[in-house]
Length: 291
Image (cartoon, rainbow, N blue to C red; front, side, top):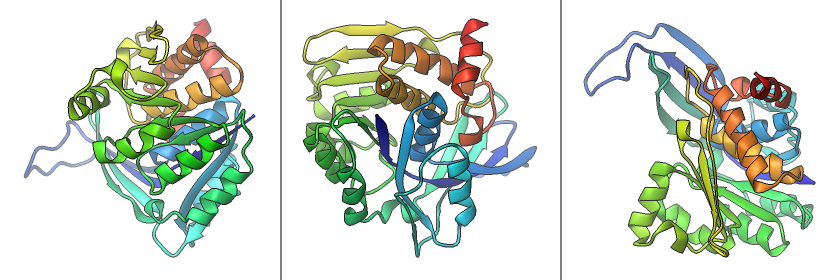
């Protein structure tokens, strides 16, 4: 089985700060580093490090060959990662002394995806495969519709949140993934409760409290708790969860076991600084669970 991920690729620039800046405030960074991220990239890396076969569908600047090489070093297949005459997307990430962050994004090539390239990738998918989507690229509704028509499981992370982005995807989603704030926003914007969102399954991540899944077809609810850890950087925690959850289902785990595995992986991630480079491998998560 295979995971196909239409997702962003960003060059991440991190600045460690004593606190997040206020309007008009100038701060000196105590540390600066560069890595790779983007919600899509992070989810691809998480799924690959969990042990799934992953194809990343995306776009980067033509001159950034090092980005492709780095992604491949994570174990992600880049057959459908295209070089375009646009800059690679990038993010400016401020991280405070408590591990909280503020992020500024420039989409770059991420929003210049080509319909033909996406269709060509999805044509190779089988009915038992999985499609991952987020809100940092263009053409998500088209990709979701194509994938679902082939019987592919479509897992959509509604982030960064925008109700205008979410609405067109709902008819083509198998599992809608949101954090608690995004879930509240969506319910408020649509004037519904969680159980009335028109998708088969909803998965809400609850940060340090764990996660909750419900079937809007049967009413079944599953809740898992998260281990207590000392967080140093919450960047990519949600993406780590989503990637591990998708990999768990892809590898045949039950929904509860996939959620628990993803929760453990996300908890371990927040004890590490960084994005893609800091996402743990399955062996690390196993050792963390054992401890």
